[in-house]
Image 1: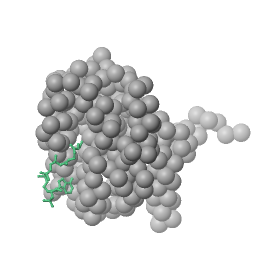
Image 2 (image 1 turned 90 degrees about the horizontal axis):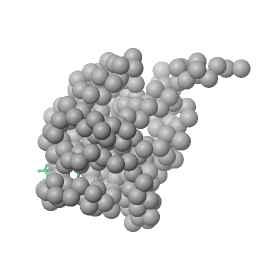
Image 3 (image 1 turned 60 degrees about the vertical axis):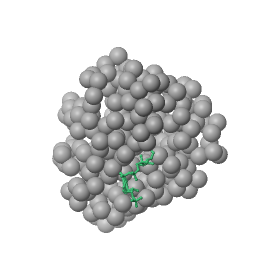
Image 4 (image 1 turned 45 degrees about the horizontal axis):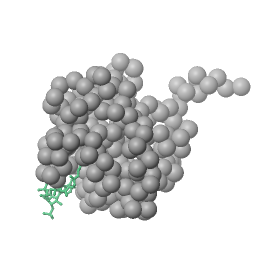
Length: 248
Ligand code: COA
């Protein structure tokens, strides 16, 4: 009989980074579809389990990436498959370039090389975090999954005050448009065909400019594609990993 501990250590490790105002639970449905990996979903400072440890009032994508880098080092992890959503994809991209030994493969979900934010959203996030989070949720799901959006955000973990603004401001200042040729890792760029927050145009740009990138467009899903179509995302990841194994 195989020892489950051994199995866990020999399975590829996937580390997941959530997006603005979210927390690790946004990956639950997808992780349930990925039993072949050892899956670790992180909370960013001030989010989910780290609600009482928000850190400084301002943090850039590079600051968040430094925090993730420290967490990987603490756990002795390297060459992981780093999976990021939205702000999390920006953090993953930054880390892939700045600490390539830590990132073996990259999955960018609902991402972009630049993530400018509607000015009204930034203003509203400063004034009323909870209302802006609800508004973002409305924009992040397709109409067909409106009930799931409400259910998910109804039970979402709390975030510390000011976090949504801090996250959106980090996105707004993020720009790696001219650095994508420095990404050396095999990369899967994955986006919902109906994404309104990071339109498929952004994903196409990533896939066209990252040297070893594959592109998966998931139909009938928006920005929260990993919640709207978890099995389709898992299948795309499995197919992509399989292609890499076939080439070896
Ligand atoms: N990849 C490829 N192209 C991009 C890009 C990216 N990541 N980001 C911007 N561009 C393109 C734009 O589409 C635009 O192209 P165009 O001139 O052909 O229309 C051009 O680069 C200039 O874009 P930029 O000046 O950065 O932004 P903008 O003024 O076009 O739009 C917003 C700014 C905020 C209105 C827009 O980014 C938007 O609607 N964002 C989505 C909503 C949002 O707030 N999302 C939150 C993300 S976390």
